Each structure stands twice: as structure tokens, then as C-alpha cells.
Image (tube, rainbow, N blue to C red; front, top):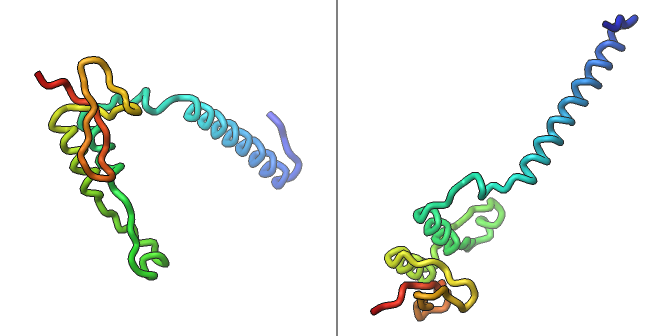
Length: 124
């Protein structure tokens, strides 16, 4: 046990040691969260996969100067993109990686500009 002569010196030493522990814990938590992949902790279901795709079809449009100044997020839904995600959901299809599909599937998309491209099972 250390005995301090002045109360101010004891307070300073306490502040230094508590700052050290807070900084050490903050650094340790940062390293832990930076190295641990979040996707490994959360298993993606089919519903969350299609929800994530549907969210990618949203965009923000601000129409007046007031919207810019007040940062009003006007979310709109691109109907072409949303229709393609709905079609994918009905078929249970997944997004195509590039222009290639795995064996037993074929590439498909809607005939509009912002349609997603997906791989669906071959039709017999």
C-alpha cells in the first residue's frame, strides 16, 4: 500500500491507473471485434438473404433544398430491381456470380435496366 502525502497526488495516481485500464480494455475489445468476422456469428437464412437483396434496391432521392439541409432520407424502391428480387424469392434462386451459374441451373433476369441477374433451376 502506498501512502501519499497530498490528496492531489493520490487523485492524480488514481486517474492515471484508471485511464490505463480503460485504454487497455478499449484496445483489447477493438482488436477482438476487428479480427472476429461478424458473418461467422450470424447465420444467414433464406429470408434474410432476400431481405438484404431487397434493401439493395432502395435508393434515396431528395427533391427540394429543404431535404438537403435537414437531411431528410427519402427512401424509394426501384421497381425493376424489386420485381427481380421477388421473382428470385418465388423460385428460390440465388444471385449469379458474374455471368456464370453452377451446373443444373441457368441464368435469368428481367428485361429492364436495373434487374438483378440470378441462377434458377433448369426447366424440364
